[in-house]
Length: 499
Image (cartoon, rainbow, N blue to C red; front, side, top):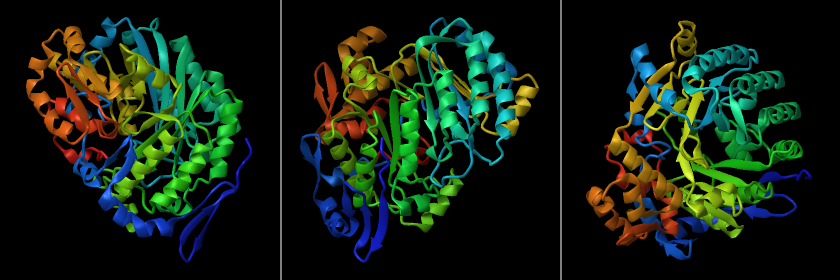
């Protein structure tokens, strides 16, 4: 793939981004955007949506990668209690999905909300791998080494902080202990700024077949504002290495609502990134929570877009990606039409868990490393977030579990309903009632009443035997799912907003 030269320059009329295919001038649109947002948001699906309606639903709501959410997790104070959270694993016989948290980054992106450790010392990863190995050896007898692993994901931090030798060591550690299915989905989050061809080769040698690139935004001023300088040439080089090495699925992460973004500047980013030809997009709404992620306070020195601009950015994203043939899976995820996630959604087999949308039902998520969250049929458990505490607990022969939650029958019923809603974009009351052994309409009588206002606003279509989510509702699916949340949504500031 040829490297495309892209440049940005400042003119009296505003930022102009130039490359051989497109020219975008920000200021002309910016003159109109305040007026436009007061009128309507056009072409979301097949209709016209009033911007005030999106603003109405732009409130903090959970992303529902779990139900109940992590806010309901409780502290685990002793080793016996920690072991109790592994009892479900000891009884399980099904498939396993592995998650490994690799927290190190060489520099801090000021927008980041992840659990990370900033270091330029490569050797810190050697010690971390030592302790990962200790944790795996402590947990594996309870999980069972003979169970098939169908999914592996390396998250961070920046997994490619590791050197090729460290990646090789990690791969050998896992292959020696787990039984991977021949067609296992094995993915890694990539920071193109610290990627090398040798690292790509090391990942592929261990079996990685999917990659997710953190891009966020291509405008130089936005990159400067968020402390992440990453020109498009760098991304293209990373993609070439990945494709040449045989990576057959590529996701690109973008963020809208970052300091300095405008509708026209983000259009330039979208146009350029579409030329990368990714299979999937995850385009997240920036969540400004400086009371929790202190580095985000720095971003307040720049111009963070108002909610009205974020709504226009959302409009642009949906219109652009659907216009280029991408399927809207829901919320902020888009895929090419023949991607496995889109196929699974059409077949009604799509799943959702801590790793996002997934293909694998009835799969135990077994996670390792600081802050990682594991999931069984009846429990969630989360590791400690502090590195020194993680090391200290393992040195003492203790499980590094800090918090957890045991689901009762009602939790499990509601988890299934919320997951099916977010995956299928519809609910069939009869079939769900049969599978959950309940009278669905009676069981959820009060919750279904909450949907009346959502129907009036065009988020859902209600029938006697079920509901269907509209195109607008796909964007606001979290607002629909919260109607089935029996737990009070306390500490709302902990959640990102819907838009």
